[in-house]
Image (tube, rainbow, N blue to C red; front, side, top):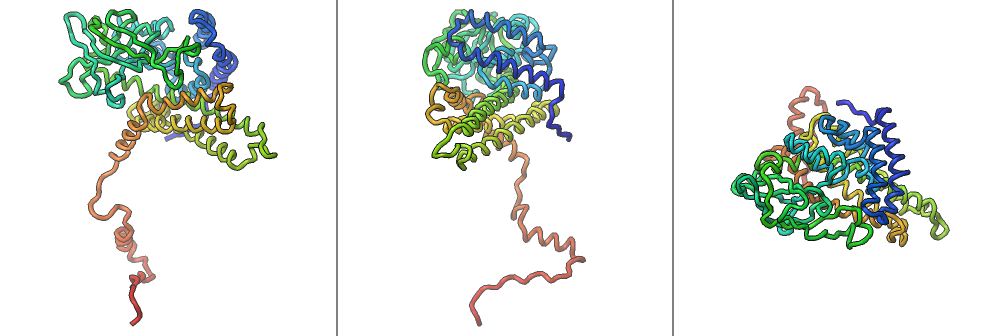
Length: 441
């Protein structure tokens, strides 16, 4: 197995261009985004999107025949590490959630007519989408428990159910909906996937569910898709709006989620690095009790621990991407779950330390750290809660082991007996006698 920790020079130049675009053009825009109407935001960002398209970096997560660039997971990971510095960058590069994951789902599940209607406009940025799986009264970690039903009625399906935390639903042109079509089928074959277009009678966007990231209505949410609550009441959807075959929803969802987890993880690394830079800048700039913070042992511990954790997180994520590229998605499953579980905690911890070093300033909205902290907490839940990934990782590891009868494999007396037999002709020192205990005679 060959290992190479370098980036080829040609793509390294692309990464420098991406970094310049993000730092010089997009990060300043994010500071005034809340003062732009949606129409103004599009007018300002459309030229930036065109520059990305002209550079051949738009929607890079898909294969060329599907409208993407065919970069593979390693290059995508390196790209998302830069895009993760600021919230608007993925949108301007055509990689924003949930559209990027939904486009992957449509790419593998939709027929040619469906791709023409929804995938190509989605990739071109002319449509936006939503992914709706979670329900308020069913455990999100067990999607087989969803209650939303889709019943065949002639040339249509009638959907009834209650969804929430549906990403971007209030602004989406169409919603990808999980619904049970065969309640008697095997657990992972009960649900199907449907496209429900905006304005379809019977689909009601009840409200945006506010979160720690955006806890209330205001300017900050004007141009951002939130997480909505949706009710489906006799919502009639043409049968040709089903993506894939009946019962395919779970298979399609996994194709959507796993690659996206690598991209999310690399975006978190970009966030980690930005927070770490702020931590270090503060450490060398601020004095306390006549000494720089950088000269205080506790601060040095924060710096050292953060740097090592970020580097380890980055290498683990790139290994997952490399495994995907070279051995396929199935071989990368454990590594993907590991970076999702562990990386979310690293992001939280690094941002937390940066806030601590800045004191009240870090807690205030005068720095981006407080928003980064609120957003980081979400990642221990979204795309699979920590507990789900812990369980999955442990199962994949433990199935590689077999139970033994009697003594453990590493039992020293048993192994020594075998070694004595094997090397009997070479043993010229008598074996030690067993230690005897007891009082003097």
